[in-house]
Image 1 (tube, rainbow, N blue to C red):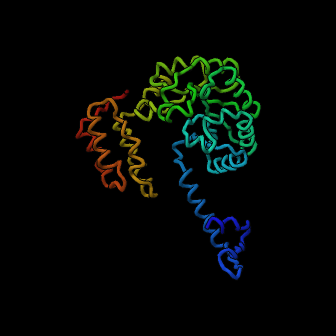
Image 2 (cartoon, helix red, strand yellow):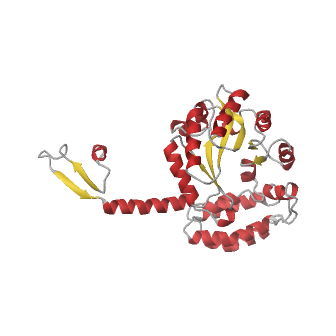
Image 3 (cartoon, rainbow, N blue to C red):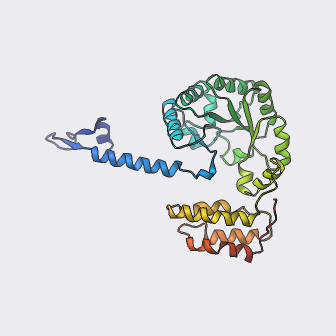
Length: 329
């Protein structure tokens, strides 16, 4: 089959030379128009499933990974057409699989290629294009290298840089280990802000409370938090109160109650219940009854083909397990 594919020409009417398969060397012509149409329809459906988001999520950024300037430009345009507010290039992922496909942190080894990629992306869109990267890789943890790397991307038009303040050990550690084993070096990020004062420098890595956030915000423009919020989503309530001075935040149970209409709406579209509910496992983290909450979700809602009808009784489970309504972590 692979040999046949290699003989296919790029046209709507495709000729296949089957002389290797038929001794008389017959040629056949197949009209692939129908198949191409079906393929385009499938591609549109796949893109929608992959890229669709709820309007309440805005503003939302699309993160891309890759090393082909042409393909990244095309993907950037697709993201713009889907209504994203920003396009981000991933230069921080340390996975070996990712490295094999030449995207993520391994691209820090190729600054010129990265510059060409972001330049191509910027030319293809009116949206802002940002970069998320590490401070170094493997044996390279040198501020002058990092500064030079950022400068190359800045010259192409990038003005927003999200810096994970760890280097990536590409061969020695797993992706999970790379999130915590390499030591944090926040000073490198602070120096970047001093050297690129007019650009937006956002710090990331190991930030777990609002005290740390306030300290970082005195030195950089923003803070990115990932694992801490995923582990305990209600951390967002602390941020609302302590950083944005907003005391009008819902309790945990109120958050769950407000989520129910969204769950019902999305499952009607074909989204599996477990794909939504698995993100609520840590909602009651640190509260009375949190263990029972996690067990209930694991057995009833975080499994494939979970019964949507059980959503109607989820608030009863919260009351049954005496889950706290307190505001704050």
